[in-house]
Image 1: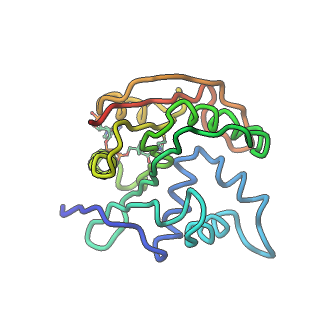
Image 2: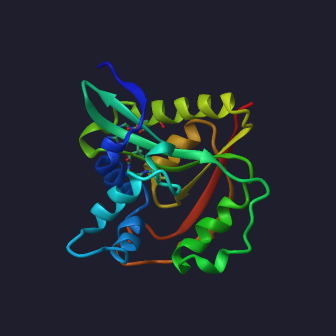
Image 3: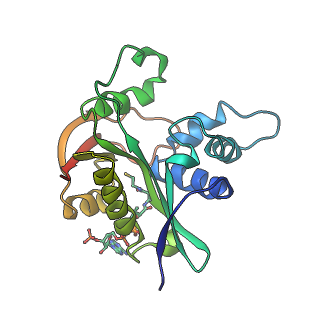
Length: 194
Ligand SMILES: CC(C)(COP(=O)(O)OP(=O)(O)OC[C@H]1O[C@@H](n2cnc3c(N)ncnc32)[C@H](O)[C@@H]1OP(=O)(O)O)[C@@H](O)C(=O)NCCC(=O)NCCS
């Protein structure tokens, strides 16, 4: 095993879209479906957006874990604004609003917006390596804390973050949407890294 973490590139956009959708519990696919043009599939919309330099899900915010040329998993992360302005909250779809409200509770933190590994590569330590690499990146950028949002019913991800020192700071109920994998609550978990 010679896993390494690399910056994501435009060529990784299809992998990013697939994995962002896994990480987002199917919410990205539901939202991308409303942006399809012509015969485009929702995942093609996600890939198109990931290949641009605009928006949270841009490849510029991505790192991939690679082994022998194959993508095992990815992480999308960036620093949250401080202060975090919620004045445009009504512009977001209802199902996204709880996530934005939770994000706003960790202003200035380095936010892990999406993290996922392919099914066949689970349990190899890829997610743990991606998180640790991202924490190093956050420290280099002068950031003092990390944040991540996870569904309370996503026990595997929640336990991974707990073992890495993340603790629940706040929570809000999940607003169900078609294809929603987990109910319960969205948990904002944070960890200090200075
Ligand atoms: C959560 C997820 C990212 C973990 O990825 P991974 O590459 O398997 O993670 P790792 O190999 O680094 O191992 C993570 C933990 O799972 C444990 N684990 C390994 N194989 C396992 C298995 N078959 N079943 C349960 N846990 C297992 C590891 O021991 C490790 O435990 P730790 O908390 O003691 O470190 C992955 O399951 C995933 O992509 N899930 C779908 C998307 C998702 O839920 N993303 C998170 C959204 S917030």
